[in-house]
Amino acid sequence: MTALTGITLAFRSPPRPKFPPRGNAADLPTPKKVKPPRSHWDMLRERRSIADLEQVLAERLALIRGDRGVDGDGKNSQRKSA
Image (cartoon, rainbow, N blue to C red; front, top):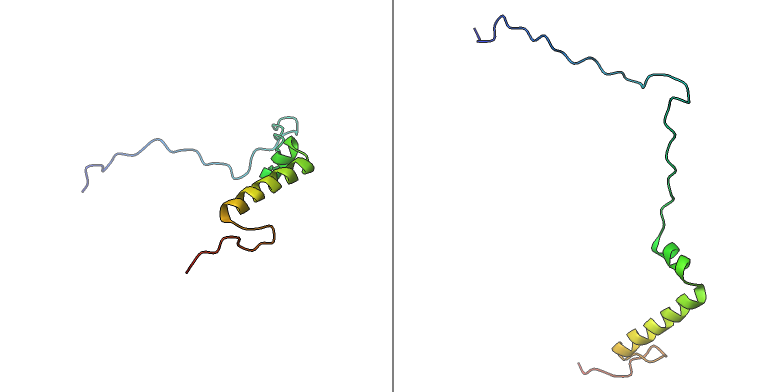
């Protein structure tokens, strides 16, 4: 026999309802408005115009091509030996 023989547990949690209780629509909370997700491009467009973005892109590409030694033709201006 175990030490708990004859002891009954008086507390049981009440069963949970499967569905929310029905009520008026006024009783239900109003759902919050959800903002659509914004991409990085959307945020850039809020701050800059297309012309500004094209100018920044041209500047960055010129900087990158200058670092790599690439001409406007897309050919290497500096050849590295093998």
